[in-house]
Image (cartoon, rainbow, N blue to C red; front, side, top):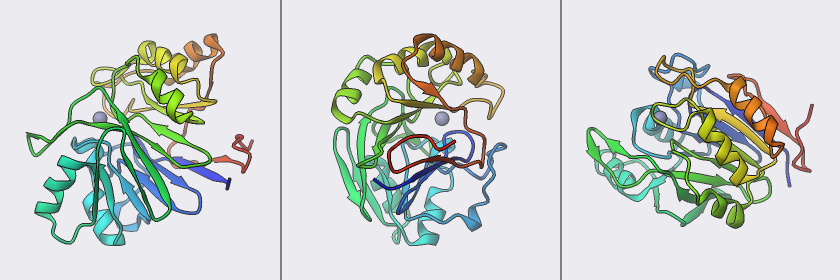
Amino acid sequence: MTQTVLTWHGHACFEIQNEKRILIDPFITGNPKTDLTKENVKADLVVVTHGHSDHLGDAVEIALGNGVPIVTMVELAWALKKEFKDLLVEGINLSGGVTVSGVKVRSVIAVHSSSYKDQYVGSPMGVVIGDGFKIYHAGDTGVFRDMELIREVHHPNLSILPIGGYYTMSPAEAQFAVSMLKSEYVVPMHYGTFPLISGNPEEFKELVDKTGVSRTIIAKVGVPIVFGSDGKLLE
Ligand SMILES: [Zn+2]
């Protein structure tokens, strides 16, 4: 296993860097909390959990600019490909997945919706990325019992979970997600970007601490979180 560096770029946007640079849900334009500008983003792969603008974000421009594919749900992939002929897409579907540029991406359920330009575009998804150190990015989701199955099938080392409420789980529901996933580390996301998503990461951490199941890492935008080749947080 190589070292893994995880960096939050605000909202649901995360960058995973191991031998490759993987960018998930790159919402930059219009994101008041991001540290990125879309012109200087480098990526070997862009992963998009669903079509909502706060997730698809600047993915097309970044993928085209870097000459790299977008991995997303098949209906959204088709819609994008129809509009952007030069775009490289990998349209996967639930429980499926793909290995692109040596990066393994598996698709899992997300209990949410997905639209692009006011049209429904299939299901949303969560993703499990990696082979050694596995990161589960839940996308936007409510809590659901099959998170137990995600643990049984994929054993993610780290889970990135929305906690903002309103559109997704709030800290109270996310705590149940943590108890089912039992990953060593959890990172809250999708809060504080806008007033509507007011879930508090400290409250989430307190709830998770009480269960003793996982260790919460409250990411700071733009500050890398480093995991060693043994999968342990470097401090
Ligand atoms: Zn969202």
